[in-house]
Length: 271
Ligand SMILES: [Zn+2]
Image (cartoon, rainbow, N blue to C red; front, side, top):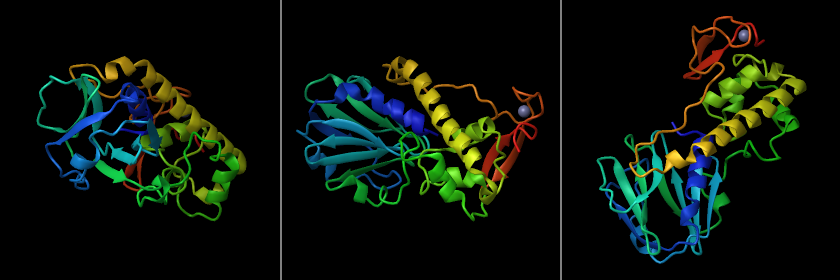
């Protein structure tokens, strides 16, 4: 599943369409998580792209009259391809441009992604308005997280994966950050100290930044012409390593289901 770093890398990969003007949108399959608005065929042509932004895992393509908001869902991918590459089964949307010979193609085998058009304030949109702060921005601090764990009888992992509290900390990054902060994912939030919140916040930022940096270095592969590039591979400390030795202490990594998600941790390094 595309996590925040992949979405950030996708936005970086879309820079070549800045200041380019849309010619047309071709929608082959409208049934994503929400139906793709039919008015886009009239709304988008002749609009110049002014900015590419990200909020949580939403990609926001800004024009003079509004924002095209795209979510990659479980398996979505946006790529800039040469315009003579024929669409395959899961290539649901193409955006064509007046001034470049590339198309922006949306591919999504599981069709959990979405396209929305926002002509007003993006922060008022129903998918955005209730979201917590961005993890990489200054507002997400130890004191902020500490204020959110007070009296909470849920696990710390559930807290940092709650998009109302902080956005974009998916299962992988929650497991990895808690390992580095030496805090068990099963710990009750109310028992987490300010000092531990400081470490958790620090390592959430660090693991996300590292993933973005790694993805940035593989950006060339990201929009290659054959469209076969997957998301970048990373080396994890605990995620997906059940039964393998901890890289720090050689204890066996344990996996446990928390809120329907597999959590991976070292029972010795984390308390
Ligand atoms: Zn360990």
